[in-house]
Image (cartoon, rainbow, N blue to C red; front, side, top):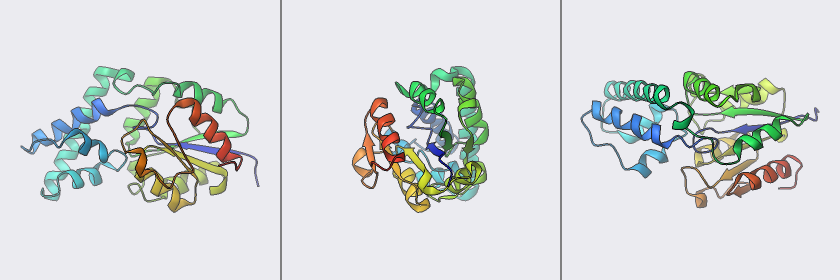
Length: 225
């Protein structure tokens, strides 16, 4: 078995705080449907799901055609906000860039992404932060079932040529945790995201800052969880 290890990150609520753009785009989606936008915590609770699945949960009484139009309104508004705000609209959480750089600098560690974002959205975000080159595999909602289905993790492992026990998943939501468990990949939860830390009860570790995250990643990869 290879000595390589794969560290797979969720994006929204884990690497970047994108809530301002998410809430703004969701406002546009609900305006289109003539509905009041749900409360902030309700909107953030679905972050991590693919957009059609998220919209179905937030607007369950709308027919599928209306939900599809809401999804498109969300995408258009999000793209507009991204062009207007750039990296500032979805800033990296404190210390995360340094953690990514140090992990990337280790010869035996590969980095990946498994996100509910679209390919267009993820590529634009990574480019805005200048971190595209750090990741050997980036799995998005366009080509996989929504989290917590494990398809994205299976694809990331296949791309890296590694097994589940050679990887770790980092995320802020129960969707990330459940996806990791379904794929047999250890999971580290972060407290700075969009789900309450108490919900991440099946995580190997739950951490509250970047320094603790880096230590936890290395510990889990070395079997010290």
